[in-house]
Structures are given as C-alpha cells and as structure tokens.
Image (tube, rainbow, N blue to C red; front, side, top):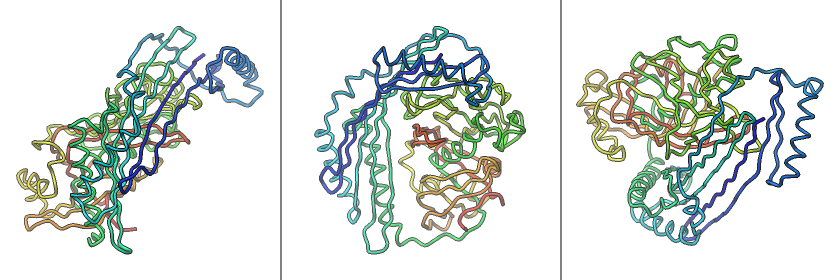
Length: 470
C-alpha cells in the first residue's frame, strides 16, 4: 500500500497597464491510495478530504478491486522490493507563504511595471507573480514515512511590441524559492534585466528580416540547451516509454550505446531551492542522480519500481505526480548538458549580449574556424518525436556573428536529429546556469521542470541539424 497526502496553496497576481488584471488564491488538499497486488496489478483511488471514515471506506473498495483485478482486465506488472525510508525535508516555513498579501504584491508589480516601461517605451507589458507551496507526506505499508515541501515563486513579464500588424511578444521569467522574490534586491535586479531585455527585443523584432534556412555553425544559450536536454533526451530516457523510445530496443534501454560527443554528458537530479526540486519520489523513495548520458554514451534512465526491471535499468526513483489524484510516472526534475573543460565566461549571464558573445567566440578562435556563426538566443518551446529522435524547437531571436559585425534576425525553427545535435557540440563557455524553468506535460499531468547548461554551447555544422525551413 502507498498512501499519498498533499496540501498545495498558491497565490498569484497579474498586472497590466498599472492595474491588477487578475488575482487568485487557490488550494488543493487530499489523499490518494494505491494498492499493489502480489502479481503487480495496481489500483488507485483518491479523496479530496482527510476524514477517517471515508478514507477507510476507500481502502476497502480498493482492496476489493485489487482482489478482482484479474477479472477487471488489469495487466500483470513487475514490482521491486523497496527499502523502508523515514525522512523529513522541509525547505521553508510555510508561514512565509501564508503571509503573502496580494494587495502588497499588486502594488509592487505596478511599481516594477513603471520602471520597465520607462526603459522600453512603445511596448505593452503584463507582469505576473506566483507563489506556491506544495507539501506531501507519503506512507507505505513497509513502514516508509516521508514528508517534504516544495516552495516555488516566480516573477514573469510578457512584452508586446506596438505597431499595427507587426506585433511580436517576448516573455521572460525568473525563479526564487522564497515568496519575497518581488522585494529581494538580487531577485529584483535579475528580473528587471530580463524584463528590459524582453521589452527591447519585442520592440526590435517586427522590423527584423528572416534568416535563410540551412545548416550552420551555431551558438545556443543555456535555456535552449535545457530544451534540447529535456525534450530530446529526458523524455526518451523515461523508462515507462521504452516500448517506443529511440533509446531502447525491444523495451530495454540501450545502455552503453554512443549518442553524442565524448566530452558531453546529460544529468538529471533534484537541486534544493530549484523550481522543479523534489527530494523524494511519489512512491516514497529518495530521488537519485541520473547520469543519462555519460561522456557520449547512454548510462542511466529515469525509472520507478514498475519500469526499472522491464527496462533493464537501475531504479533511480524518478516518479512524480501532479497531485494526489494522479498515478506517478517517471519524470525529470532539473536536467542539464555538461561539457568537459568549459572555456571561461566571466560575470553573470545577463552581462552577455550578442557583442559579448561574439567577443567570446573571437577570443577562443571559433571565428577563425567559422567566419560566421549563428547565435540562437532563448527558448520558447518545442517538441520531440521520441520514437525516432527528431526535434523541433523555437528560439527568441537570431544573431549572425562575424568579424564584420552583427546581424539581427527574427526567430526561426531549430530542428533535426537529437543525436546530430549532441554529436556536434564542440565548446562550452561559462559555468553551469540551471534556472531555465517551465512546466512539462506528460499523459495529462503538468509538473514543474528546470535545467540548463553552461552559459553558451557551440555546435559545429551538421547536415542533421538545421535552422529555418518548413
């Protein structure tokens, strides 16, 4: 028996044109019960309250369903014996979230909106704030009892250019684990830098030309690298999908098979204080570091007690669930691309515009190897066919960098083979930056995601990787 209890509360505000467009205060609480028979057949049920008598009645109904699992047509499944665990991991006092006053947040967002608008005239702005505390307690019938809370707070901006028929929107988000993000000086500086850059980009994009399609030497930033790691390799490495994954054969993970350059690795692990941090799986196991790609070769998969043995992989306790109502499934937390011996990029990532990126390439000799390099800035989503390994991503803007100068272009599709992309990574610049955040959807469930890479990655031209086209 696995019993999951959850209590999640969230506060959010959206401000536009100097006034609150929407405010919300929401909460969800309840418990989900999962019974696993000796043959691995599984039944689940949930309730939106914690009253003892209905909980016991739910248990009895599920026990009856478990006994009748064969006649109900439920499939047999594998199940691993697990070690009991008792642990607590509470990152922040919940009073900090209960004390968030939405009128105070609204006034603060209006103040920030005025400051951004002064730097970016001619743009329409929408600012958002969200603070969420997600707490879980998970019991198993073997004595396991884990309790953990996951604090999340984000500031976001959507900047839209003005001009009839030529509007273009650019979004930016910054994450902070504490709900005082709107008032913290460091968080404020980072957010304002991102917001002003988004406003300036939105204002410039309508008049930018389109870049010609083709295969080019590329530079991608940590946000686009996160998208590549997450969409292309992370989902394909989730062990419950091995019957159709390009990283598996006959339902078994192809561990040891070369998939990328030998100086490139892909890692997934929970990082405390991160947007997607989750220290324990939804089955009450300590989540482990998964080295998905180890110096160019497949190594670990993202697995849970049901998928590890059939997939031929070790248990990495990667199960997550959107809520107590949902069945857990292998999911990523913070996923990143790491490159051996990265070249230096001093200062903060926000210090680097296209001119500074060009200087990095010039000093490292990249522009001698490739007189023109195409820099893809930012990440706005994408998708991957994990059965064949093809991806399609979108960036925020394109810059062509050369010794002669910098040319600015509208964003275009970045597409191709995930193996081609991982094999073409040549250099990395700067330390790891792992706060590219978002939400990941899988089988109807949304969970927070995050990750990144070094500040910038350089990809040599590869016919399997293209920019633009249809």
